[in-house]
Amino acid sequence: MIALKNLTKKFGSFTAVDDVSLTINTGEFFGLLGSNGAGKTTTIGMLSTLLLPTRGAVYIDGEELTRQRADLKRKISVITQEYSMRQDMNMNEIMEYQGRLYYMPKKEIRRKSEELLAFCGLADDRKKTVRKLSGGMKRKLMVCRALLTEPEILLLDEPTAGMDALSRRQMWALLRRLNEQNLTILLTTHYMEEAESLCERVAMMERGKIEEIDSPAGFIQKLGRYAVDEIAADEVATHYFHAKDEALDFAGRTERNFKLRATTLEDVFVERTGRRNGEEGGMDSSQRNGQRQAGRSRGR
Image (cartoon, rainbow, N blue to C red; front, side, top):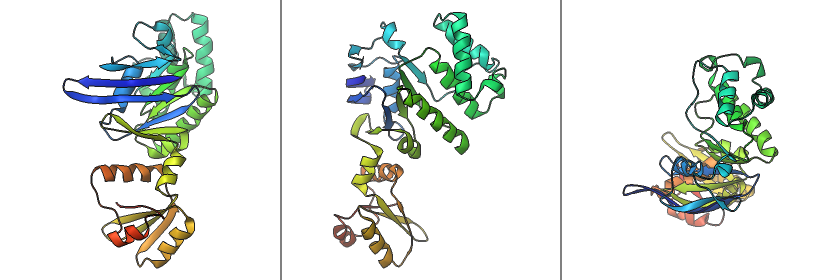
């Protein structure tokens, strides 16, 4: 189990992470969502001990994580946004170099490398150098490298950034399989579909603070499970409803072109971001009052 208690990080007078407390259960797939600058990467940095907290602490299975606790640090592996691998090394060399950093026996490095490369679908390409790999293959290799030491916790900071749609879906399938083996995963991502598909719970983070924690389905339920997009020439006004018949009734009365669909976690994120920025909703005041119990709306 991971516990963050009053975690705070300041850079001079700027507070990047502000008194964050949360618990991530063993074997949970947890998402940390927020706008650019919300504090997600800084939080990952403190969990990996790359950054030291200004105040507060991180606990792993009840014990405080510090740079001196090699036994706790060994339980954690991190996959960053950047491709942090030498371009002239092939997959076998990348894996062997990682194993030697952790003083693993050579036979064990080879055994685990074969197992992991096969698991990630990379075995046939293991002699290719990094510079010849696609973006998706590089990401998978980073996963293999991170898993070589058999960590209990995997920290993923924007793991599918820059990947095409097919490679992203392949990575999702890989991460699900890992989580099914009771690996605890903490994910930061700007892809709301990714968080909705993978995470059991997500925390909405903004300006260094945790605003709310719930399951993706829970966030969607609060906003309204059904969305009606009213489409005009210069805008799309989205209206949210808790019941399908209410959404159908509204759609039947609108004189605009419309689309009826299921609400997504991206809708939740956009709605919350719009409220923080003081944007107006898509309905006028009389509509909003009339639909207060049925749903919520936001112009996009």
